[in-house]
Amino acid sequence: MMTISQLKMFYLQNGIEVKPRKDLRIYAMGRKHFFQILKCEVSDSGTYSCDAGDSSTSCNIEVYERELVVLQGLEDLDIQEDQNAVFVVEISLEDVPGEWFKNGVRITPTSTIKIRQEGNKHFLLMCNVRGEDSGEIKFVAKHVECTAYLEVEELPLNITNPLQDKVALERSRAIMDCSVSNPRCSIRWYKGSNVILPSERFEICSEGCYRKLVIQQVALDDEGTYSVQVGEHTCSAKLTVEAQSLLMVRELKSVEVVAPDEACFECEVSVPVLKAPVWSLKGEALQQGPKVSLEKMGMVHRLTLRQTSVDMNGLVEFTSGKAKSSAKLHVKCDP
Image (cartoon, rainbow, N blue to C red; front, top):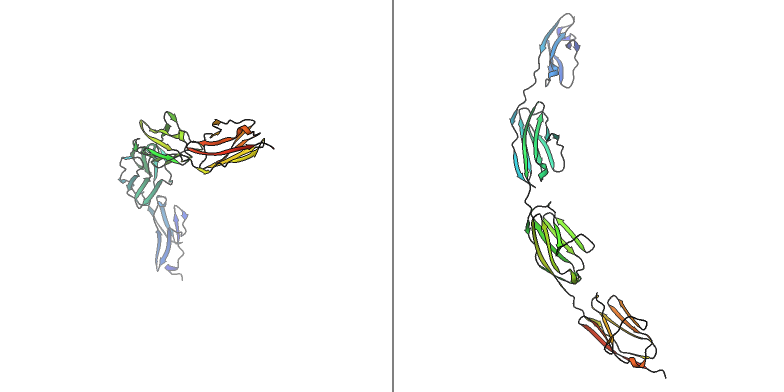
């Protein structure tokens, strides 16, 4: 004969048989049979019955949704640019997810926006905010919501570290630099009244609040007054360019030829020269022509006199700035 503990029991919810699952346990201990619902949901509401064949029993279960309320709401925030904005909401239930919105648009996490939940507290962190981040911040969890306003004050635009007068050696690199109050503000560079644009020689750099103008291979005509404009603020400074010392590395040597052979004079200076040097013979300046060849190869300068004659005997001179060199030309007659 079957004992009570050996009876096959069926459990039904609203007439539908219920089987054990992760959140539902059905078990027996002696003559006691248990039907246990773990973490009840509203959907668990209904009429439950236990059918043991010749006998059955039933009951009603009504599951009410827990009341969700805001325990700590959002607070308006007024901060300056580049600071971090932190919003905190505390609700009454721990296992309820929430969403954040800015001006009605859902906020998603990025490298500068962090969203996290710790128990029943929800956090929104906005790093290095900008002026355009101002707006309404709203938190929504199920049917409850709360809002606050984020006001981001733009950093004032001014020059915190003005330009300083600089001295640069010709053909070196010169740097004019300053600092501004806002890393995102744009500035304009001038030489005199002329706007400076980036080029092979002029490099304009921005590093945070630091601004600099780099001039490559400074020339003498780069000397002048440089200025920057930031909003309504300006500052200026003077760049002085010192010419490189020009020295003779290899002097001219006297030349003796037989007319009408060519006579060639060559010398070398310490630095390249932009302005053409002056060659002279017997005190008279020489010009490029059929009988005179003037050449420059880097820092080497060459004079070639074609179809020499006896009346060309005299002193040959090379002059470039303060650098000078001379040698004698001796033309002999063809015997």
